[in-house]
Image (cartoon, rainbow, N blue to C red; front, side, top):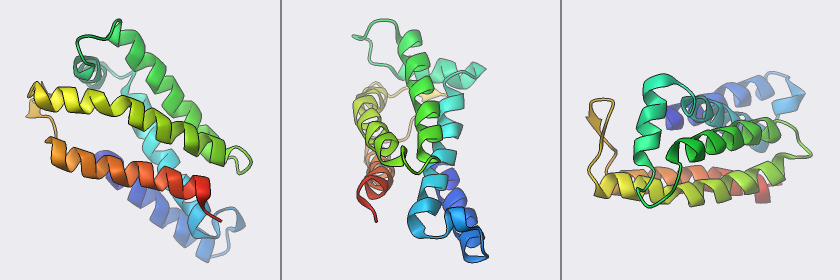
Length: 148
């Protein structure tokens, strides 16, 4: 839920700033880039922080090698993508890369739900709501990629 809150809050704050005269975020697409970037900073940092990192490593499907390395690499990609979203000329490329990354990482969510993992003392988000969230996140990236 925190990533969705970050996406929405970042979008709203940036959109309000744009409406009050901050030219860099004046429009729905620049505001969406800020919201999505904030979301990926939040999720990217989680790939390196104590308990949350351990939870992410546990989510990696067992058949994949070096889950710790996979989590670190995806964290770096998320953080790099967040930066790329904030630079107008690289934003479409960053959005495309992040959309593909989210699709590539989705099997970890499926695996965690099927294995009924408990992360941080709570059951993982069930597959239905998790899929709906992924559609929203990928949709935001695609909107940046193809938006005007």
